[in-house]
Length: 401
Image (cartoon, rainbow, N blue to C red; front, side, top):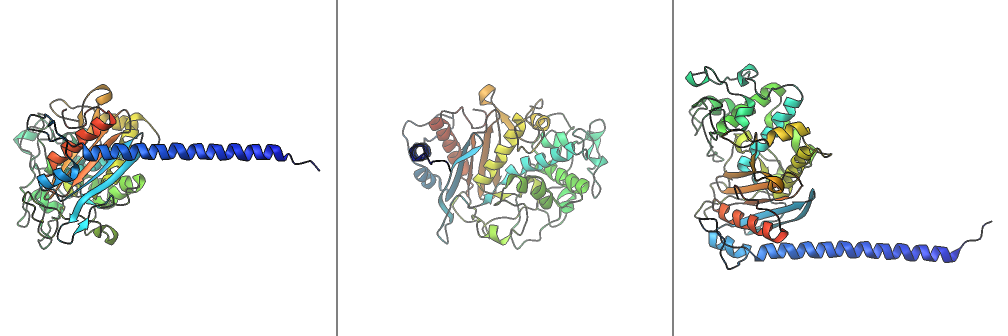
């Protein structure tokens, strides 16, 4: 029987203990540094004037929320494909006095559009749709009415996603909870119960950018007809579940576990939206409920696709196509800004009582998502975005800066 070298065992135990202590110290230091940076963001908000110039005096997130009459805001910051921190501020429901936290969900509004676009590229990868084909070739339940504008050029998925399809209807008002909710066909062709104009081609497809939420509803119809799945279920399977966006949904009524997390929306005067929020049956254009953490996971996954990393949402070629500028427009399915290390993809959102922004640098998985439950949210989002860039020494992240 071999003799046990107790001295060697003691040395190994000591080394293991030292390494464990060192790892713990590194983790604690990292946590401390991140908390410190977060607090600097919170306490170094500078008002931005109409010319884009920052004020010389710093204020806090809470002070600006009060000045701008923004009840609640939620933030997620990420870097190297990981969430650095997420936090909520203020009230999700002023009447009940309930607080916003990192799990509170908001209407993502037009940030729904990049989701519909990614789903479209997924079906393109499967050979079910072509980027540049006439959508009427695959639409079954309804077709884009032809007119003088479509004699030589047609509405295509690529043109819809880049807002160069020539289709009408820039945005949607939503519906009160006790309203009759129109179907997708009602929205597209128009009906007595819709509060938006029928979706029609109003300029030559491919000519120039014309922002069209209506176009995204044509895309929603196309995705459903081609996949033979309802849009909410399709997006669940293609994006939300794979990315583990557990607190997000296009379904309405919302699942009970999410319904308890919703924030109320508030207008510019601080009055609650009737019923707490409007319903948006225009799901591809405006129907997503989510929180900053979940949206950050989406932005991270899309960035991984662009860089050809593992666990992305799309093939690299698809993501590169999305983030290629179309003449006289932006990207194909998402906004793009900057060059070199500052090249980034982003999207804003604005429904009744909700305003939000998501942005990420394309060459590295870093960025931020900010959501508010107020029509007054954009100035605050701009200021927070600039504060994050300053404290982390990142390039500008706001649109066209």
